[in-house]
Image 1: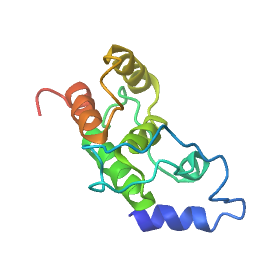
Image 2: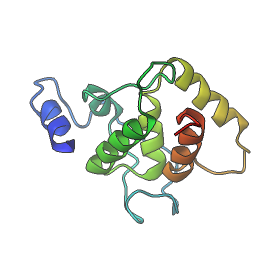
Image 3: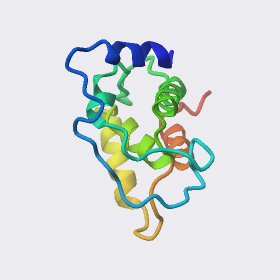
Length: 134
């Protein structure tokens, strides 16, 4: 699956892997890292946004939050993104209710909580968007 997405961008004549690089803070050890201590915070946002990935609204009937997270995690791993960078990238594919939720969640976190890692994001996302009847 990841290879299919990666292939679609590498064939794009306008694809530039170095364009619009966004680099987040210092590379501190992150216990939530997707790659057990490895990961790159300089994954290009423009390259990520060119991938044909699903969006999650949090309000569309039939949306599967687990499938969304698993897809985002798989792609972020393939790109070599760190845990915190993966959260940032996945957040760009949240819309409507889900976008409002992540903004509210981030405002509600303690200022000394440190960067939001994938494990915390995954748990909070599922707590919010997985129906209680499941």
